[in-house]
Image (cartoon, rainbow, N blue to C red):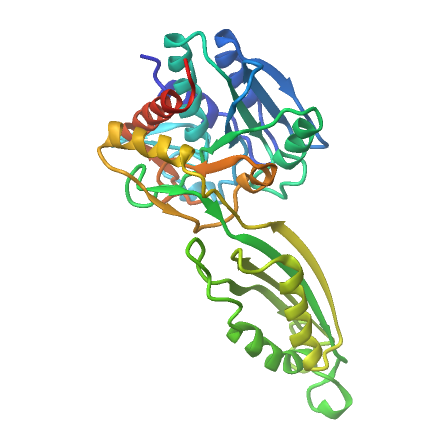
Length: 376
């Protein structure tokens, strides 16, 4: 039995705050090269990317993950040091324990056991690991996928090891994700004294009616795969801090998580129409984080469901909720993409953790998944 815990402890001990890999990828190379994986590094600017592949034929199954983690926050709030993996009461604590070094460790050891028992396979197995998922995601998976496509290396199936589970391990498989479109909006007014409002123009007041309309807008009704599109203000800032000054500018950040009923162009058109309707003087910058994607083909999800049933005794719910993942960069190539990983209760929190029992079970699920997908 190849245990997953020692590998996860090694990975957590590396303080790989995005976009720093902190040596995690070398650990993975050391683990998998003896099992026939060839390693390539694709580094872009401050981001490290690792492509580990066993085999040269198709079909190609890829395990997708990221070694970078979010900052730990205030260290004195942790019960143990965030980069000192600590076992207490049946849990392993540390930054990345759930998001997502446990997924990486579990599919690494699953590959080791699978290939030990099946040294000859039909097709290929690969790991695509980036250090740029928690950050801007500009130099990570998206660029590696482009490079692979340019050399005709096509991904057929992709399992993302993100923490998809909600209440118990394996209760949820993500078969898609909503799109994410961000806007940075500036409303320009005229600064002045609060006692002389006729000599100024308050951008907060000017924007108020448009804000109500944007937040009350019914963007769509969703569909069988996605909930309705939502609009949320994430940041709003105006003023100098003084009580007697009407601000000259209002800055707003907002996000739309959108279903496949909409696209980037249609959303932009509707937002601009609302702003223009109210006669606002504004500048608006857009950033598309990712388009919605959905895997309706059943082979990959069925293989995961069978593995869950065999190891855990139950099947998962198929969902598309939550944030974005790097699966959004793989799905447009035509690959089937699903996400299956540990419980997400403590991700990005102080005292992030994973149950030791869940860690080894997850690795076994991935091993059974490999058996169900790869021909030997």
